[in-house]
Length: 253
Ligand code: BV8
Ligand code: ZN
Image 1 (spheres, helix red, strand yellow):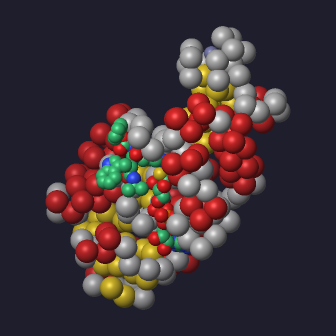
Image 2: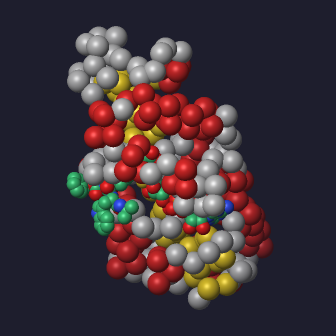
Image 3: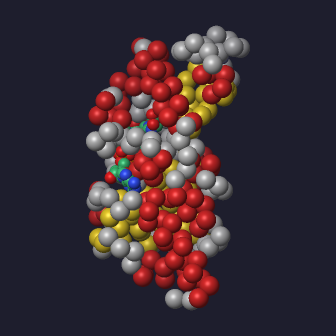
């Protein structure tokens, strides 16, 4: 079902749900003024992923790649979680278990108070030396000339994000697969669902019998498998869902 309003069935499913899985992409943070990848102002309009978000490009031109990541770090440091992020944290009071599975590297789910967050593509606020693995925080990195080098071994330091052609962190990926299999209701929020293997997670939830709910201003390849696709913004619809669910839990359906 593709709709622009929140159908009643969603509340019925959430009232009986024990575990809710939540798969998120860049659209979840769009209302926090963090550019998405494919939107009109999207990152990929200006930069080619193969030119910047991969290891070979980094080794060929670490200055260019660091210029890009330090500009994104500054945007993300200045950003705040939006009402959509807070609504997902709020949902933890209404459902036994809420598990966030995010492609976003912006740390906004945790900053909004979500307690279980699996980061499939890493976290831009972490950095490490490619030679000895030493970790560095952003205050050290951004207060030194770019590209940053390791104070222990002199090796190049990179952001702790997953680049194209790189494997996802196995522990986060298998925990996400597991969460998808255990979900009674599974949300797909603000993602175009075309980057793999992350985009396989909603299919795992579907296959395991979860009730699939997508929120996106436009339909996506995932709309094929959803029970409900609500055309709209996550920062507007999610607070409405948790507000209504709270009052239903108090007054009954
Ligand atoms: C790998 C971190 C193994 C870095 C990222 C199978 C088929 C085809 C290709 C492949 C395949 N398997 C592997 C590949 C290759 C590749 C891939 O998927 N390519 C794509 C482009 C086809 N995958 C990989 O390389 C992966 N690794 O496979 O390793 C391997 C190893 C060796 C050799 C071979 C294979 C690694 C992929 C991870 C890359 N890193 N990010 C960084 O950020 O700098 S991916 C990055 O892009 C994001 O993390 C995210 O995953 C993706 C962007 O997608 P979205 O988040 O969905 O954002 P997008 O802008 O596209 O869409 C936003 C949506 O929100 C839109 O629909 C919009 O309508 C909506 N929206 C807007 N506003 C709102 C909204 N929704 C709600 N509310 C709003 N307000
Ligand atoms: Zn080092």
